[in-house]
Amino acid sequence: MGSDRKRNDDQYKDQIMLSIHSDEHYMKQALLEANKAFEEGEIPVGAIMICQNRIIARAHNQVEKLNDVTAHAEMLAITAAQNYLGSKYLDECTLYVTLEPCIMCAGALFWSQIKKVIIGARDEMRGFSRAGAPVLHPKTEVSFGLMENDAEILIRNFFKKMRGNNN
Image (cartoon, rainbow, N blue to C red; front, side, top):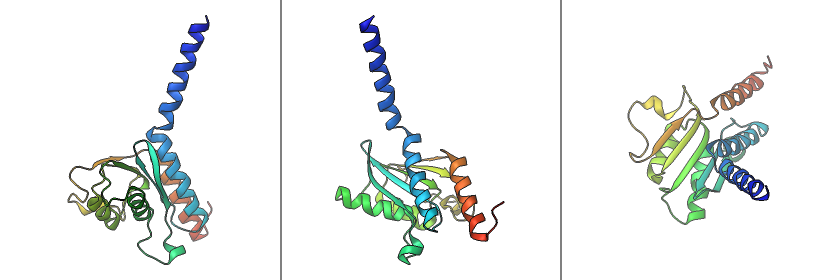
């Protein structure tokens, strides 16, 4: 009986460890960053950079705060990750971002040779996929739609708030 319980406890610990390193966990962290942006009056985009199952950078949009049109969550996360690693290449890293990156951010991701980008919601107006041609590095894996609804609701609520329309 005792060994069965220990085996179940070990399985439970394994499940906890797996969930901590899940795509959903990391996207939730990116959504927390996006909420910070929302609270600061910035377009609510959050980004988390992962390397070897470790968060090495967190960022959210700070365009208004820094008065800098390049202060997108992705750009800030890229810079922080490169500084942390001491390398301009992020070829062993994964970026979790709540909204599809714009062309500028996609260009920076291209040059960083990032391994993988996991995106919450598509940006039909300004997302890099509107370009038609491949924008990211050919080796970069891309995934869309993780926690898409959560990201879309946050963006919609932000623009409703900005317009003064709380309906």
